Image (cartoon, rainbow, N blue to C red):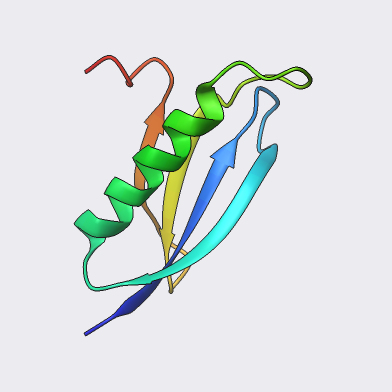
Length: 75
């Protein structure tokens, strides 16, 4: 069964959402993989703006079910 997850890429300021997308996938693991790919692209240096600092996945009920910061990315 497919479930809706919201992926948010966060900027350097507290609760600054740079990008927010909704995905409909079959599992949390698939949403996490998608979030990490989006985070990797957002971390690439840009001409303007700060690079992304973190990414989080929120389930349909509004609970944060996954979080990864730039400091965790090396793991």
